[in-house]
Image (cartoon, rainbow, N blue to C red; front, side, top):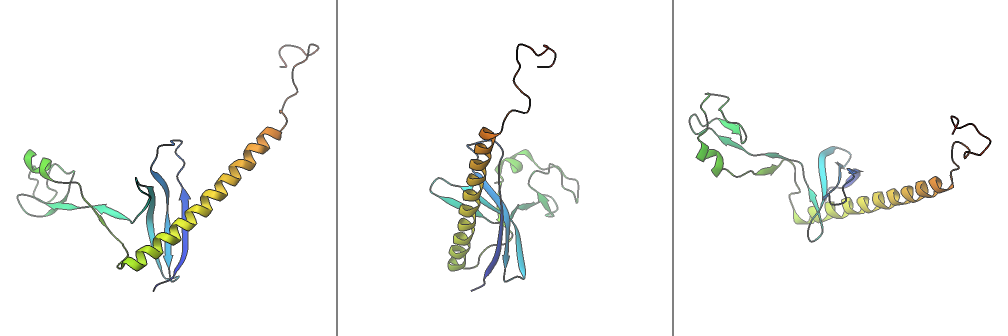
Length: 153
C-alpha cells in the first residue's frame, strides 16, 4: 500500500459556527505524488473527506461540443441552449483524484482525521493561551484620575 508521507491542513475560520467546511489541505503520497484541494467536511453522521473535483461538462445540443453547465451559449457554434435543456441538467461534480480501493480510502481518512484532531487540539490550546494572556495583560494606558486633564483620558 502507498504510504501517506505528509498531510497539510488549514483550519477554515470564517467566523461562522454553523459552517460544515472544517479544513482544506494537501496530501503527499510516497514523497512523489501530491493531491491538492482535499476538504474535510462535517457531515450528518461524521466527517467526510472530499477529494478535489470539477463540474461535469455537457455536450451542446446542436454541435455536441462539451460545454460548462452554466454556459448559456455554446463556445464552439454559438447556439443558445434551450431553456428546457438547462433546467433538466443536473449539477454534478466528478472527482479528479480519488482512492482506488476501500482499504486505501479508510487509511487516507484515518490519517487525515488524526491530523485534523491534532490541528484542532493545537488551535484550542493556542486560543486558551491567548485568552489567558489577554486577561493578564495590563491596560496600555493608565486609568484616568481626578488630577489628569480630560483630554488625556
